[in-house]
Length: 185
Image (cartoon, rainbow, N blue to C red):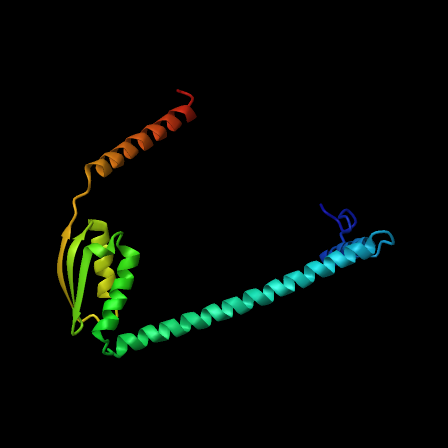
């Protein structure tokens, strides 16, 4: 049977935490107010605190600016979706050529014409460029229609061969590593 006298006296958790905090504060005081190196340590702590404060202020400012710009962009996008503004053909042509410059390896191989918001495309493209360009043009503000007369360029044989060679080499390296990892190679 457990009696009151047989149970060891345990101090409350709060007392232990207070004692640990006191020891920690004392050690920190000794560290910072040491007569030999205390001034240097206090200066380092101050410099790090100032640096952290400046970085925090800069990060908050950049985040605020980013959020404001995103909100403005979203508002402009919603406005352009709701209000179908009329875009001059020359402006629409410039927008499409600009997008083509980012998506097509040789944009000069594609002829673009715009008349009353309807875009006409002629020329040759690869399959990958075609899909990216079509998606981009469809989402260009001001496009009312699209006349597609594009043709596909065949993939050169050497590119197909490089693709096969890459696949074979990659597979063989993977198999080698698997076998080596199991101790069989």
